Amino acid sequence: MMHTVLPREEAVEAIFSKIVASPASCEQLREVVYEHLEDEQIFEKNQAEHFTEVLFQAYKNGDISALLLELCGRSMFDLLREAYLIPKKFHGKAGENPVLLTDVDGNLLPGKEQAVSGREYEKFRNTYQLHECAPRSKVYLADGYDLIRSYTEGMQIEETKENRQRGVLALYALPDTCSLGLTEAQAYAMVWDTFHEIQMEAPRAIVYYGQETGVRQKKEFDEIGILLPIHEFEKKMLHHLHEIDGIVLTCREKLLKRTGSAGLDLE
Image (cartoon, rainbow, N blue to C red; front, side, top):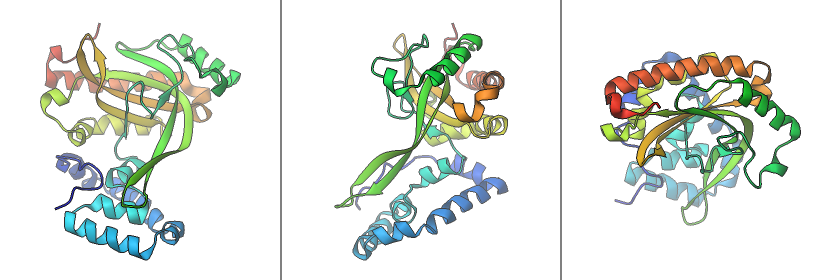
């Protein structure tokens, strides 16, 4: 049996059961899938021979994401993220999504000066100076993207970034879920309620989650990031940051009860 085209997510039962138990979540997922299935451009650019090869390989390997990439231009977890059912994957502070534009002191990173307008930076600096960050959290100016995957010749996968959203990223340290033996999908299930509370508080916010993306004193920890696009939240940025602080700190407290007080140094 051949390998799957993308790494297979492990232990998905918990997060899938939460989605199936929510009629609203099921409807969101169906709408996203049908929207992509109705995109004629996908079928116009895919040759019949390539489609058949993907179909047969997906059948042989039990690889639903391989087939979804061909039909929708998205993997299974891409579709869940697009339907706002799970967080986007956080790639770390030096990663490609989101891309940080400032440092921990609120200063523009070298080489980013020309990419940020004076108005955008002024808005961020006002927020940075007025918002009192919760323990083990920071705010950054950052660009978030949708990561789009597609096939190239030879059944290879290429990834492109689309739909840039520039905003204020609130980044919080959370206990290391890998130390509990949890997969990424299981970690998503643990923060399910938090993720949806954030969506209720700030419907246009973009939520990121990363396992062991942070390191402090040689100790790894998880991170959750909430990107508030400036054009969406400009007038109530501080209000939403304050409310999100409370939601994430409640989540952190619950996780600490599971990992133990040593799960995260809050100093």
